[in-house]
Amino acid sequence: MTDGPVLIPILGDQLAPDIAALRDADKARSVVLMMEVADETTYVRHHKAKIAFILSAMRHHADRLRALGWTVDYVKLDDTANSGSFTGEVARAVERHKPVAIHVTEAGEWRVQAMLDGWALRFGLPVTVHEDDRFLCSHGAFDTWAAARTRLRMEYFYRDMRRKTGLLMTAEGKPEGGEWNYDADNRKPPPQRDLLMPQPIRFRPDAITRDVLGIVADRFADHIGSLDHFHFAVTHEDAMRQQRRFLDEALPHFGDYQDAMLTDEPFLWHAILSPYINAGLLDPLALCRAVEARYRAGKAPLNCAEGFIRQIIGWREYVRGVYWHEGPDYARRNALGATRPLPGFYWTGETDMHCMAQAIGQTIDHAYAHHIQRLMITGNFALLAGIDPHQVHVWYLEVYADAYEWVELPNTIGMSQFADGGLLGSKPYAAGGAYINRMSDYCGTCRYDVKQRIGEDACPFNALYWDFLARNESALGRNVRLAMPYRNWARMDEQVRAATRAQAARFLASLD
Image (cartoon, one colour):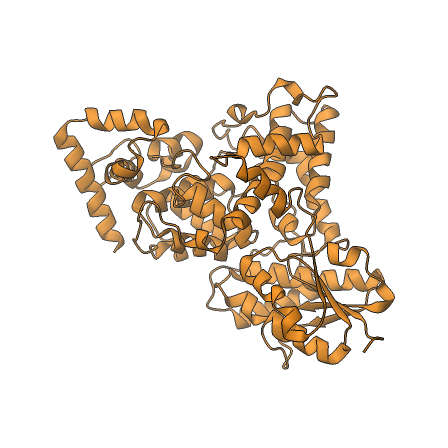
């Protein structure tokens, strides 16, 4: 037994060759275990393209590790002896290899970390769980930061991360340009449609990916989503190609139009890199340094560089910290008492609301929608309609290729649905049709009239917005950031208020 190897399980979102568990390991005395397990494909009903992306990226990563000299024991989903779980596959690997110890990098989710924490007792072996230092802020460091504050505001956390990394900082320790945040410059409405608008690279599936696509099409036929538009990079090299495409073609206008939406244009100037970052194919800090280098070389404006870097070292790190700091009960928070079931059109995209049809339709096709479509279209509708936030959370986790619970859950429960009562956001992200009309071209071809609040042709978002405020006044009425809309509601004629709420009630009844 003393001559056995060290077993190093690598999970599907740990696809970096220098992941912590591998970094100091002896290749000659180690066996890397990679597992495709049924539990991880079905604990929620993931989008077909999401499953295909992760499985293909895992298989390519195994080949990459072998080329680097590692011994890789790879268990495929359709292996007849596959137990279907991480712990079951580690148990089988322990029998095969008789390891002296297990080394693993900490998991990204509570559910999986609980499995890892039970392995020492389960297998009678020493288990070393390495900190995932792909992130800038450890769990302990975030807890220390949070303990000193009554409100966990991302902006102040982000400033600390800027200081820690030195990104966009002057030699004197000041923020580049004199301001920490240029978000006010990043809210331009959509431009005129441009034939030169950048497009992400559409990677042609190779033999490995084609094999995976066949397995997914057969095994997960009843899951949401299409495989017809599968275009993801599944290797580090191809992910780097998309990174360069973003830096060269999209970054210079990313900030300006990051909140804009256009019909049948799902990508605009967005990076389309989050699936690769979250799976481990790209290094988030190296990407941020590349963005900073473009700014310093005069190839990207400050508002664009800062806006992108804030998403990575600010928001991404922050929501991970909140996820682990708050614990598993965070998933069931429901501060506004929302209980309505998720409407069926979230699975089909079949609705007369053009904005919703666009955001959901591209989600079905691409397992992708950008952050404003998620927050201010599908999320905003669920918030206004009083949809059960846990159902909203599960939907987001299922349908997006970049969705892992640590990043998706706080974004949904906290930012999108305000179900944590204001831990993440100082106010709900609620808006009527005017916001959608300002930031998109969706309303121009919608069957509903964005200028109307009452009547058969009225935009549903309008009455739903005021109904949301009215029915949640006891919870939200003292929120200082909602003082003006509540004053406007109070000034309305009583009959207008009653008609508005009746309009909302009729629409909500149609959802049932």
